[in-house]
Length: 265
Image (cartoon, rainbow, N blue to C red):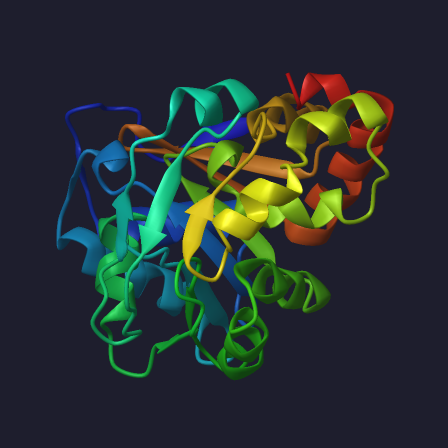
């Protein structure tokens, strides 16, 4: 399924290595791409995060748009009560003030460097912002001002791609789009629907939490490879994966309808 640009785990990775890999995956001038990444997964990168970002822009060109999740660090974890743990609350954070220009993100070094670059726009959602640069950045960010998912939906409508640099589909929050298209069975809906009293006590404009089992997106990696919608290439110590977001969501909808327990376990 994949090929190798560099299989030497001790090799230095250059911007040119990354560009070769991106082109081999099929990324080209004018493409819009959402990027989830781990810089350290590559090994030693000459030029660090900037080299990765420069490689992306040189491949997609001036007509291409790059998007990255810049989920915010403006939160304080609150200890859950035994009752909250028992009811299925996996985490609970108090949301603090957010400044799109200053608030750091926790989605990796590459995303943190990217959001600071000249000309990069960042959305206003206090927890799940996106950053983007390119001709389609404005419309993606305007959609993402409502929620990160709306921004990813705009990328899908633009026939955009998802690029995973040294990470898996478990990082791909855009896959939540599929959940809006599927009627989950009652057994799962009951697990992921919080009590009304909890929602009233912890409104999501002030608190960040989830409820019940989080969908196991990584279960879709093998189906994506089997259906040949995902391409892979090795660079340094990392595997890079590219998939068109529409193809990914459509396939996930099919699997979610047939085998929902595979993801909500």
